[in-house]
Length: 488
Image 1 (tube, rainbow, N blue to C red):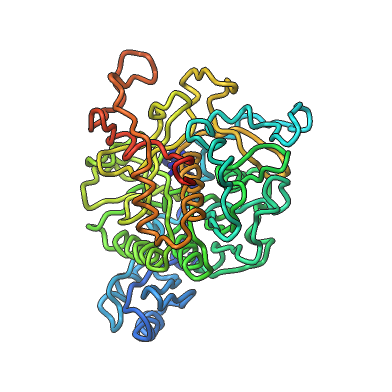
Image 2: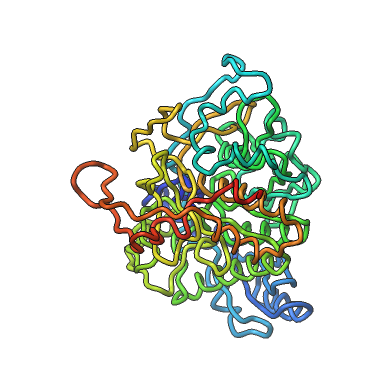
């Protein structure tokens, strides 16, 4: 899910930033207002919650009566403790680490963009996508065969909760619905439909455009083909310029999707600043509850939420030793998290959690896994494997800002393959509710057995243990997503 899963970029392609920052903590008298999540009753009862926020000296930044959540700011680091127990307040907590007011670290990519391609320099058969021979990932899920039957419907929209989608990319612009695109990273997660806010600001913000190309790059004789080339896309920006997705940004993204006719969301990230959010901590419990309510609300509005599992190579079914949280500046904690701690949104009820495989259909070395923690698997790339494919790169090729194409790897790349297959399913069966679509996705998946020995480094060390034997469920859930079955 990652961050290309893991770090501040909270993308499914990132790794922990670790302890960073050397500046002195900001004094209380000059501290910038911090953000807090306050949980209250649904509907009109949230008015009392807002009143309590103000009584405790806070400012209401955003209110979501649909899910009983208020986002507030205060210069008082003890605000959450002060407002707890006041009328209309069920929970309250800081939405990011307040231990020390240090500048956050810039996210560290687990795998950066690995080379770019100029499609115009490549020969192609008439009507073909010039770079499709480099897409080893499409045959793994039978996408080309599926496209001979259906390429999806423009009536189905996939919301890409990410860094934003390049609206001028030649492989994407025909499918991008700008009227339903939005930024959620202003203020307390307040929706802003200005294209200047939701589009990526520079080529370093390439993650969302790359994800979008895997889902729905058009079959137009340019570049690559997406898994569902005819479906629509919406750019829902939830990642800040610094590379973080805080709870209020994710909440805004899910509610926007729920209320603007989005059929599928792709979430190639985890919510910062905690790799795992623990119920035993009142701050983390409040942030997690806000995201849980937002995801549940989207599901109640018939949205299928697809989430990358993460790039930490964690067994999510077991307690995890986390030494990299919080990741937004200040000292990190050395903590052993138990079953009250969860990756958000990847371990929330009802989401489709996706692990990653390389070109040989074996778990990617970085992909998190776990029995009953993974729904399905999909191609995410693995440069450590030596693939016998047209592309010797081993990573996933897709669109990048500025009209180009490039390679990345991570569970961030696996998730959009699954989202594309879900979009094909919803195109084929537009009357099916979300729950039935998810059931079909799992039923149609192709089983991948557990490896006899999992040693991706080849150094004689088993790096992960796959539970489930012939079912392969520990690594792969129900198995590899199948685009062909989705359209038949």
